Image (cartoon, rainbow over all chains, first blue to last red; front, side, top):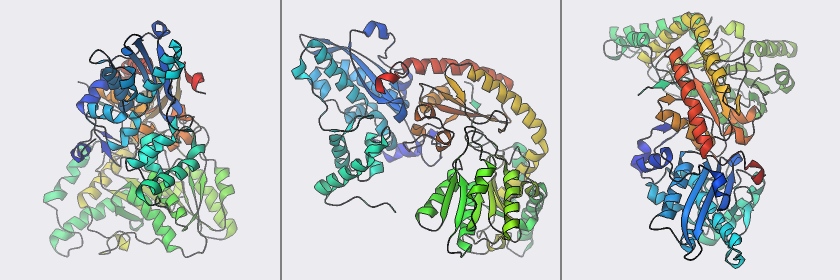
Length: 226
Length: 398
């Protein structure tokens, strides 16, 4: 997570000029020198693939993997990302993490969390964290695709929870997790999950869920906006 | 490495001639204009001369200018000052969908707080407000119309004088002094005519930081007879409308900057328009691009293009790495999740709004700079599009 001193040392200023942010050298490196990005989709037609997000909500990520059927270790991982610097750097880092130490097992890869990627990137400014939450989902979608292609349907794990936003593929579990991490308003939950950016019609349900989880875990309702 | 600054709509460098005029007012003529001694009087002289000079450029009276801290404060003073001073039960305000946040955020806040009723006029695909739409929105309770002179993102120049005439006519037929007409001229001040009689405005906002003047200084023109309340209280400077010791070097600098801009604008506008059109034509040669804003009713320094399949912030960072400084209306660059309200207001879908880039030229921009930009941008776009899964897979999602 970013610390305060990073926020002071900003090199990009927002459109409205209200705040700056700062990217770590690692983020810049993985953004400007993307690792493992897909150069030849034709050659990967046989690889397992996962895709999440949409250009409408500002991020779309596509991940391809090849897996050794004997060990179920990932032997190759390629990606394409439509998104900002954080989004590109996150997917770039994800591909490296998945492949290092002779490759993660699919079980390990399924447990990869955005927080793990963030830690390796040296953190992202708080406002940019939501840009990094799609890569691991695309990876899990690719893993499911691999099992399907292998005919191991029993190993296909649909995302836990119920899909609330079908465009951003956000589930009730994601919202629960966001509330647990301290997002107590719709805006904060959106910043973490991007819920409702592609499909605003789900927002009333999202607000209900936030209220529900807040009461469950924090014993209070979200502040009412005036 | 090259550094080509094409973000002059964000802010401009200080003109060295302006700095020279400001210089004495930091340490030599440092007095408080409210003091009665010679040091205070010298400072007051500087402020008075600046006020007179700016008033002349705007075809206004010196006592119609209120100096303040910048564009945002000036917008706030105009709107809050007018709304608060008016004791009518129902207060209706009209604005446009593409205003600067200093206007739009304030007005929507006042609306939510129940202080005003608000009509936000939509704009056409070029970003123009329709004068007839404005006329249709007018009500007996309308106390204020606030429409910007030129848009900061897409550079569209609004027909302010036409709107001003329509409002004059409405007031005459309804026999009322209302609504007053406010325009934010921050983007226009350096390049367009500021004659308040020709524009028929009652309140006008401008600032120093977009016209090669100092940051932290701006002004509000308030036509004689228009009553507004202050939003800052204290020692009663600026005829009680803006308390606080005057920013003397800033005010002197603002006047100097405006004098230079207005004197040189014809020549400079011709030069910038040529460069603007060259850059626009060159960028539009890249496939899947679109010019945002109006082709001709446009600030001479503004180029705003949407590049499909590319996210704006990523493009800004890659261009930054090549020494080209521009900006984006992408959501990721703004901290909100929605892309630019201006780009959405002209009817672009979200997909295209995320990939808009704004290049704003300035005094320092040379033809060779445009050549360099036109050499670099296609490569950056090709690289980002290569990295992007969007395009082929759009259908997959929809």
